[in-house]
Amino acid sequence: MKKNYRLWPIFGPIIIAVLLLIGLFMLPLNFKVSSKTLKEAAVSLDTATFKNQFLKKQALETKKTNYVPFFGSSELERMDRFHPSVMAAKYHNYRPFLLGKKGAQSLPQVLAMETILPQLKNRKVVFIVSPQWFVKRGITPPAFKYYNGDLADFTWLQHADPHSAYDRYFARRLVRLLGPNDRVGQMAAQIAAGHKLTSANYQWISFQRKFLIHEDQLFSRFRPNENYEKRIVPKINQLPKHYNYQKLQTLARGDAQRQTTNNNFGILNNFYSTRVKPNKTLLKGAEKNFSYLKSPEYSDFELVLQQLAKQHTQVLFMIQPVNSKWADYTGLNMQMYYQTVRKIKYQLHQQGFNNIADYSHQGSTPYFMEDTIHIGWAGWVKFDKRVADFVAQKNEKPVYHLQKKFLQQNWQQLEPTQQNLKAFSRE
Image (cartoon, rainbow, N blue to C red; front, side, top):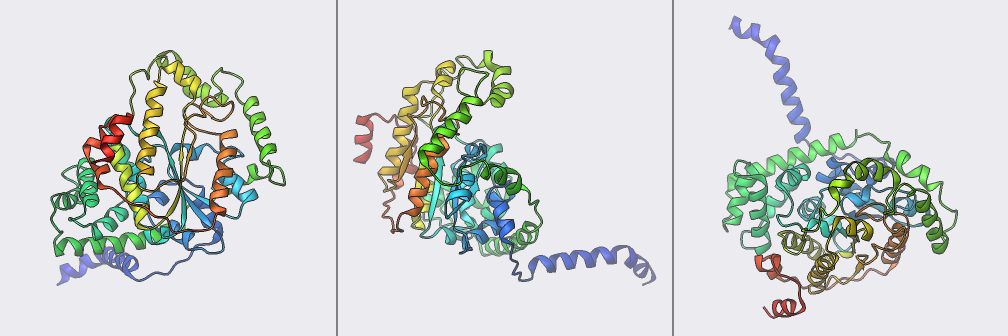
């Protein structure tokens, strides 16, 4: 007894702290965050926000501010004064909520949506597609794990249906990307095999989700709040007082002309100096064997479409161009590139996703692009107008007709010739 009494001062406070922490995470919470915090989160491109739920959910449920999710990747980080977040803050009645940065391809975007599916129902979103996602092996395990969040995994597992071709496909991808020793991967393997999870699995998933939701609510309130003030406000003040598309295009081309003086590719000076020039000799002809025509990414992309279709979400897709001068230098086959875009658009159109801003042929338009594969300046101005028109349109329930054949390997490997596409459409 005396021995136990002596141990209590050492271990007692630790036990109490652990119990209090567990209680804090498990008790019902009803936190709200300020509009300032949401404004910061919307432009943070923060990985934690991307992975989890609280800030995204709060923003999309806020009626006073019309947040529009922008799903994309590294192009969202190209924040000149014509970036959609800056233009919207100055001129429009909506605010982009940016979700994605470098490496955030289709599967990370599926999981980013997973925790906010009710908030995507019957609303408008923007989804930016990069043909460079569609490489031979698709997203790599390290890139996927970087964006993969436990809360999204457990949310998906809680309702995954082993009878659904979409869920079985996603489960196989999770097993492949997470590995056999991962707990989520092990449960996904059961779904992939067509088996329902056990009651013990569901109890564990429920406990983990509740803990993670509370953790997300607690710590989302304490993230740094400097993104909007540093990234957006100074640029807002650099825009004309009133919106004029032609004037903005002229200003954008002027900015680009002044900021692309140290190279012949139309690339931002700093990007060229730090990212291109040091490797320029090695990069000459380096992309001559690249191909985006055959990739598991096409079926991963189908999971994105399924998520959006389930929620009757109205989507504006944007397909990015590639800098034509840079493509010529690196040897990228532009016919292959255009065929890739054709394949992506076929997959969209065949299932009723017809709202597409296809900029794939704008790669030679002066000052449309900021660097080798990302739009900027005049490109952002053009895209901003397309988004503003899209948001202003009357809400209409879209009609989608999903086709499970886009999950099949023969679609992933299909060369998109007219003959092949005709044959595929008859399957």
